Length: 278
Ligand SMILES: *[C@@H]1O[C@H](CO)[C@@H](O)[C@H](O)[C@H]1NC(C)=O
Ligand SMILES: *[C@@H]1O[C@H](CO)[C@@H](O)[C@H](O)[C@H]1NC(C)=O
Ligand SMILES: *[C@@H]1O[C@H](CO)[C@@H](O)[C@H](O)[C@H]1NC(C)=O
Ligand SMILES: *[C@@H]1O[C@H](CO)[C@@H](O)[C@H](O)[C@H]1NC(C)=O
Ligand SMILES: *[C@@H]1O[C@H](CO)[C@@H](O)[C@H](O)[C@H]1NC(C)=O
Image 1: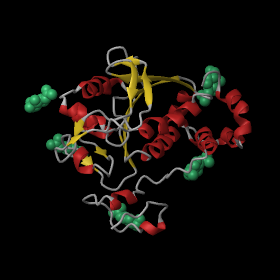
Image 2 (image 1 turned 120 degrees about the vertical axis):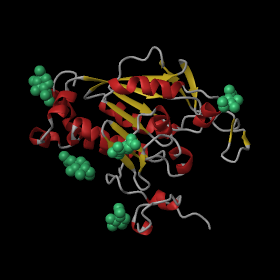
Image 3 (image 1 turned 180 degrees about the horizontal axis):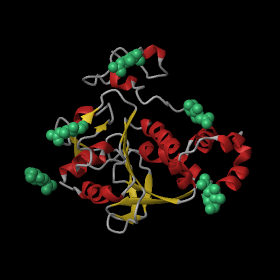
Image 4 (image 1 turned 60 degrees about the vertical axis):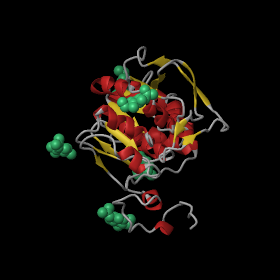
């Protein structure tokens, strides 16, 4: 925290009833995190998935008011990074032209060479990973592998787990990924225990989430781990977001017929998802 926890919480008191925070059993690490600057690096590439980036970033941005957080948006080159997927081939080998789709851009502030030391590394998912693979462009994987030993927490959203797998950092770990492209992502990596029914998985320093919106639920759980509940829960209420807090909640593993998924989940008892015809 920029000054100290107590004044910051006093300023935040209008958010909610934070007086309880005085009694909250923060871990030593959470107390230290509240008093230090956390350097966050978000790895992006052309064809990134919009919500994979901006969903989790909303919570980080909110918490950068009471806490000291620095953000670097990292890509192969600085400047505008496009969400619109570049030309690539689909899983069936068909050429895919998505140039008519809308395009939201994010500005990369750093390259893989100029990125500062990071406490937290987050890797987005996106269709652009297919283009990078076709071009034999392994710059994202090389960056992850080079930074993994010195980064305290490494997170991926959706197909971002494929980059972690190819970088070799999931070896011996449990992980999950988007259920919509499960086979495509989980063929990568050696000795990875891919968890078929999971909203997100936390193993060691690695957090991996399922598809797109699941990144927001993972980020809420991750931030509670890093900072403790009181300020994080308040922030989530301010965002008016109702996170799934059970990491095994995963009806989409059923929807997408992921092999090994827990098919006994009663989908109708869960919130969403939409049924698909037929
Ligand atoms: C943060 O540092 C200040 C000043 O050193 C200290 O008074 C405060 O207790 C620390 N906060 C936590 C949560 O450790
Ligand atoms: C990528 O590597 C494969 C296998 O070595 C090769 O067949 C292909 O031509 C390469 N593609 C590009 C764009 O370099
Ligand atoms: C694979 O990972 C598990 C931990 O999940 C470990 O016990 C085992 O030794 C690893 N196997 C190989 C061949 O590396
Ligand atoms: C934060 O929210 C989670 C999820 O609803 C809840 O389990 C936890 O008890 C809350 N923590 C506090 C301190 O209110
Ligand atoms: C499968 O899902 C059901 C319903 O949510 C749950 O009761 C059961 O424990 C789950 N089984 C496993 C192996 O996780």
